[in-house]
Length: 193
Image (tube, rainbow, N blue to C red; front, side):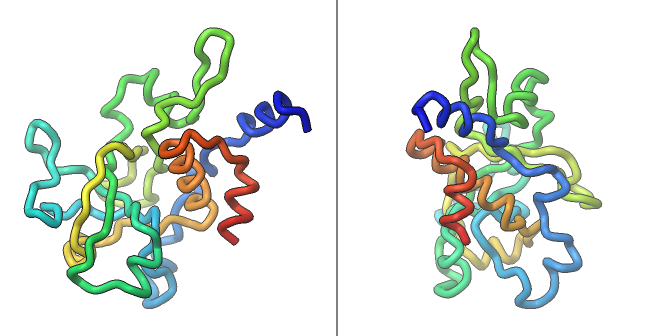
């Protein structure tokens, strides 16, 4: 495949799955041992990080939620209550203006006559079905990371477990944010099998 046509094929990959394919159904995720905590899972925000610094915005408002950014193995096989887990801030999508909201949801934007990655430091998160406080569209802010003790994350509570398909999408977006490496979705899915 020629370089230009390969890039065209990559940018036609959607960044995200359909909203209905994001989260493991709650009754399934809550079964003991069925869905251990993993990279990409959504949690209520603990009140403080591992150093006791509050997880609040500039106005002192608590973070809406957090998404786990630590590798899954750190939460499952090696996990102890005092282990430090990396999380990223999650915000409601409606905190952004309509144009930014559309770009975050699509993951792409048109600038002039070019299609570019939109807001590379964000990951769109679909609403969690039938959830009281997270039933609206959200996004992560990959520049806002903290480390929290696993025990405080468990105490805050998991809101939703990310499906495998959605986890692959989040990994792909994270690869682009950290390394500016635009990887075809099929390559990420193959690596995560």
